[in-house]
Amino acid sequence: MSGQANSRDVVRRDDGTWAVTKPGAERASAVAGTQAEAIQRGSQILGNDGGGELRIHGTNGQVRDQRTIAPGHDPFPPKDKG
Image 1 (tube, rainbow, N blue to C red):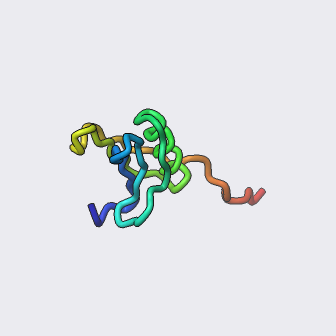
Image 2 (cartoon, one colour):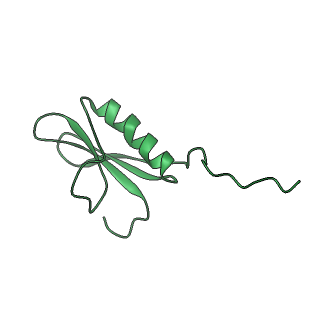
């Protein structure tokens, strides 16, 4: 899905593991043993990357859920001018 500003997909791999992928990327951002672990890791990745959409695919490859992930903690907050 090109055109999506910041998104990740949780997809099942042929070996039974679950991958967190970024559209257009050649490699997975993360690989986990269970879908739940991949969802958690994908949420962390998106939060650290400014937030975005996490699409969760079922074992049949179809999107079964989509979640909006809020931006996480800003490592470079603006300095107080006081």
